[in-house]
Amino acid sequence: MTELLITPLWARRVTVLLAALIGLATLMPAQQLPDAPGTDKLHHVIAFCLLVLPMSFARPQQFWKYALYGIAFGICIELTQPFVHRSGELRDAIADAIGVGLGCAIGVGLRRLSRR
Image (cartoon, rainbow, N blue to C red; front, side, top):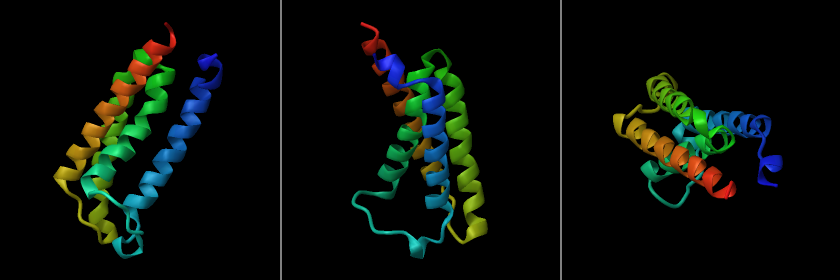
């Protein structure tokens, strides 16, 4: 039943939507961002965890590929931020990578549990 609901096409669409939202949120001027509870680093971890989770669930055998894409996306954002008057930070990229690892682990783990 779960496999019918979470197809690779569905997961890909959700991932693209999340990437667009993350890109928008991280590249818009800081003054326009709404206040949100939690720390900046926690927001990075959550966002990148959610980014890779759908594809890691839909295609668990390729989680490493989505991990590399997610980490590269985070690094690209941090390198681009100075051009839109935001500060790119190594610690943000590290938080992104932590989120990617967590998202891949959760996605693969949930997939294994769903097959039992």
